Length: 193
Length: 193
Image 1: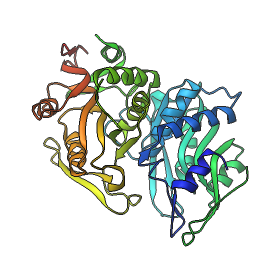
Image 2 (image 1 turned 90 degrees about the vertical axis):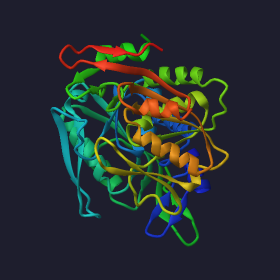
Image 3 (image 1 turned 90 degrees about the horizontal axis):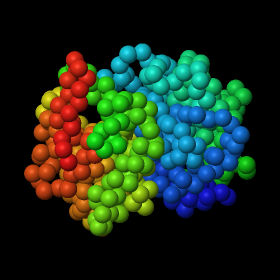
């Protein structure tokens, strides 16, 4: 097990309905030392890639993205999830439909902050069905930018998001891929990497 | 002018209605080197304070808080703005009413992540009327924790939030306090500190 898998086993809580709660260190309370370890690991996994920007989505991706960005020496742009009065002017908008929740969401980035010169590393905390991620990729493509890679903290390997992204040919690096969780025993099985 | 005031003059845009757009470096695209400078400065201003946790509010406070946290060696907890399905169990909730927008918002933190042993530095990007900040202080008080200080990137000195917080006796450190902005000329006047 790597450092993140160990932490998930130690502090993650498995709930009914394939819910994995990691709010004590990842997405409500945030362990910044852990985020720095993730930054080091992503830097290794994306070695040789010419990355000049990190893109993430609000809210829980932002903290990880900002700490990881220090390991690449690049700025972060976070996408907003619905039209906000603070974003004005031209925007890239991706309309994404959740196939589980049957709801539509907008993923929005100002045109000022993405263009054809951008070589982007996408960072997020979770990957399950991957709708938000599909929206981010759509926006980077709209801008003419290049998706150099996608770094995820925890992927739910039993949901389709990761497969879709790998099928599309993107370098997707998930630090922990959960294959199976049992709410009764609390046991979590990770995919061998 | 300090480093943040200089950056605001260089890249901030003044709009009608007392709007200051700093989305190119603070709250949409984020300059992580700048956030580290802010971290150094907050560390100086809160020297001698016994701080073991940083609390902020989603979404645009999170990035600053996570980078600043490295200068204090503490974890970050971010409050959510409305009841989310990802937060379960006991929560601290503050109901805050905006006196400008006439709307109510909930500020929410899980009881697991704040308690009477916590000595908290509150971090946020903007302070105007201070409703969100009042909610954060309420929650820390509910938990029996101590507000050791409040660090803000940009305060709108011509709105009431900063005065209220200083009247209450809190150490409020705003790295840039805008006294006046002129949308026609673009001129920004800062309070001498």
